[in-house]
Image (tube, rainbow, N blue to C red):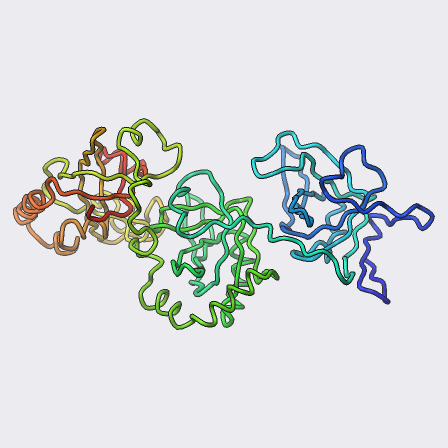
Length: 448
């Protein structure tokens, strides 16, 4: 890459430059550039810049790098660079900077994504010209990220919907090795929060942990702002976020919204420290999943008609009773991932789910039948939610005799019978569904 000494304009010789004898290209908006457009140039704002990736098919592999640009109209376009042209954009197309781009190859999208209004994508090749825009008085480009509010995350939890979210990183937990479906991977949890004061975990793994995770760790003295693009909402840790293979994590983005959040963080630093370090609110369902209005509640008949839920998890409300007699209201689980285990055969070995060492760890459970005007459904409450319903800890029940546990069960059954609860439920894991014959697990519950 060569850089003109008299200005900050940058060219990529390997991608070609506009011949001096050629007519000046027409400055067009993205929406005016199509397959038939010739001699065009457009001013774009780099919205996303992904890392280099490699796609393989048999013995053939292809390296590529994806970008997303936007213009002053708010129109966005995806761009891709392949193989030998990938090194040519090193140092160029940096996030949030503006560039003049001309003579990229225009290709039509096979299918128009839901949030896309431009039916083409660009291929940056050896004929493409790229230079950074440093002109004074350039149009102000809009904020392109459709950010999801923290209080609406429960609507898309455990679905295939990916969301964009911004937050200040209040804590970065130590990286750890975990097994996921038998494969060892490196993970790191960071805790992010915005003005809504609902701290939530974002799990980084793989390259995201080793690159963005370490960059965040090195900036923790300043509590950096991040924008996480295309991340998944899960209920593995009450309500949390997780990286997806298509995700992009922007650290310290140079946008006004991030600067405003940073200023708010400075004014509220003591409260954020209390929420994250003292109260660990990122694991508290009353913070992450507070009670909802009746308009958000789903009827049991609608829940049962969807398998799996078309819209993800669901809030239900109804009268409850203990589902069926049980000699004890606790089970043995992995102390790390909480997966149910028979310790007669696994004690002293590694958990088959997370790969960590197992030791005796009792966990509370209670199976309930929930009724409303449209039907009934069996659910199971586990861990802290079960202990709140039962009124004693799993450790206490584990130390009690079978007769004492059965007496406790009978008392709890009488107390719970016909009480009315508001519950946020998800589909049970395969192990829980098989061992307890309950299709749905309680994530959070409240008196109705």
